[in-house]
Image (cartoon, rainbow, N blue to C red; front, side):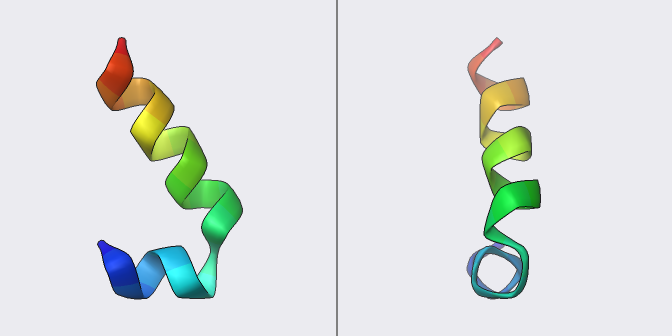
Length: 21
């Protein structure tokens, strides 16, 4: 989801945190 990371970095950060759990 690199494209989304560029579009909405804030949302991507949340997704990464969810994966870390």
